[in-house]
Amino acid sequence: MTDTNEEKGQLPPRPSLTDLLGDILDNAKALFRAEMALAQRSYSLKLQALIASMVAMAVGGTIMLAAFIALLVGIVIGLARYIGPFGAAFAVGGAGLILGLVIILLARSAMRRQWHRSWRPAEVVEDEAEAEDAPLSAADDFEQADGTTAPARQYREAVG
Image 1 (cartoon, helix red, strand yellow):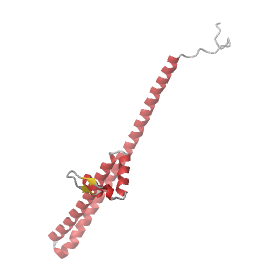
Image 2 (cartoon, one colour):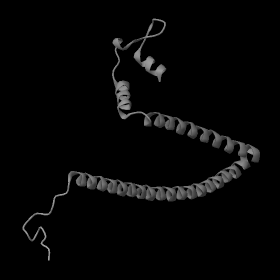
Image 3 (cartoon, one colour):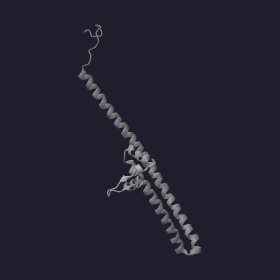
Image 4 (cartoon, helix red, strand yellow):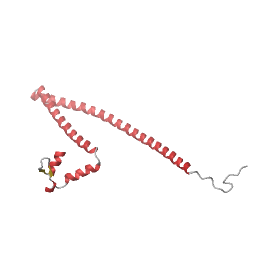
């Protein structure tokens, strides 16, 4: 029977520094792989929930569109008694086109503002918001290319 280090009262041999570094590296690799798998699964679940929500919104929007068309047809039929069928159709259609155009232009403007702000660092957006709220003085005039000065508010509006 052979004696082990423990039976002799000795401590087990200590691992070398290269063994320890190798273990740390292996553990770091395993941790990275596990974190990546967790993130992938998390985003996969979020994407599935987003797709399900989008499908539900599309179905709801289709039903709303059908109901809106029925409402417009009812308005045309009601107005046809007073201004004739073609006049009623043009009046309701024209009002719908104007309303739709206004909504699209407002949404486009909001989307451009959001797009413009979302791709810039937060510090720049905050600095610009503070600058827009700051009171202006004569010292805030800027020299233009032709040598004249322009008030700061005009300069900000021109630069955008």
